[in-house]
Length: 132
Image (cartoon, rainbow, N blue to C red; front, side, top):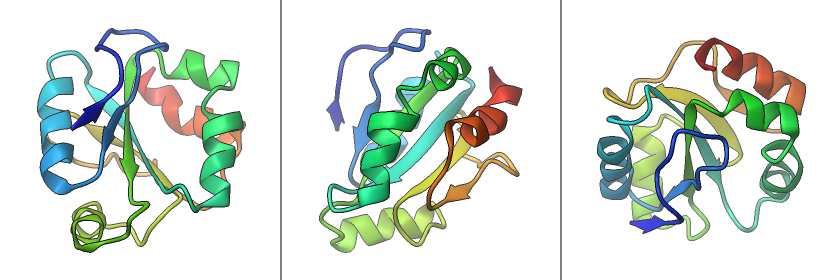
C-alpha cells in the first residue's frame, strides 16, 4: 500500500493512498484503531474535477477543520484496470470523482455522505460535520 506519512489524529495527517481492494481493506484495518470515520476520495490523474478537489476543496481551511477527526483514504483509479474496476465495484462507484464517508471498522458507507462530480467546500463541510 502506498502510504504517505504516519497516522495521527489531526487534520494534517497524510492520506492513505490505495489502488486495489486489498490495499483498501488494509487501510481500514490500519485506520480503525485511530479513527471512527474516513473520507473516501476516488480520483484519477486524468480527472480534471479531481485535481480541483485536491488543490482547492480538500486544502480549504473549513474542510481541514472538519477533517480533524476523520481519516482520508485516496482511491487512485488512474490506471482504470481490472483491479481498479474491482475496487470501484466494491465501493459501488462508477468512477471519479466520488467522495463519501465510511465507518472505518466495518467499511460501511454513512448514508447521505456521497458526492459524485463537482463538490464545493461548503457542501463537503456539511457532509463531514456529523463526524467532526
